[in-house]
Length: 208
Image (cartoon, rainbow, N blue to C red; front, side):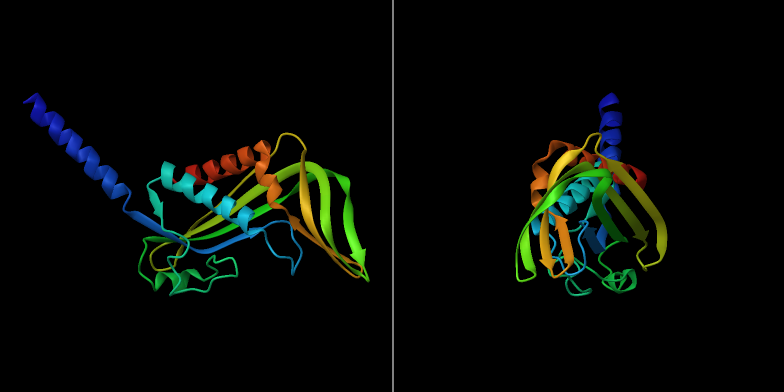
């Protein structure tokens, strides 16, 4: 009798877990602001690392299973880094998920910034690296929609490094205008990795 009860309980638990993981999701818009100015290319490695950190955390700690980023290729537009930039209504027409998500990630210096520019310039044009030190903030804004594209909830989470970290900006100088973006070298900093993990976990927790 005990064996039968144990088997039934185990079957119920397995089925419940399987059903929970059937709550599928797709990101119909994913964009990262790397403190860049208009026209500056985003670093694809940094972009990918931020996307994977968030998606992996949500998939592993919630009952939501995010599809891969290319799932909606036939339904919404994609940017030059191959990330979706569509509307929830257009994504919902795909009928491939129970929920759709808009996700904005912002990475920017927080507080006092130390450092100076180091740009090689010729004839008003220049390119180079700008090495700075400051605390760095990562902010995630996530908006959830149902299967029809109707807004359900909005989540905003952020985390900041406890100390200043050194990072590089990719610099492009055109005339008197200086444009910049975070460089992928920030990925090697353990404080940045910790903050990225922390804010991803906070976002996943808010989705439960």
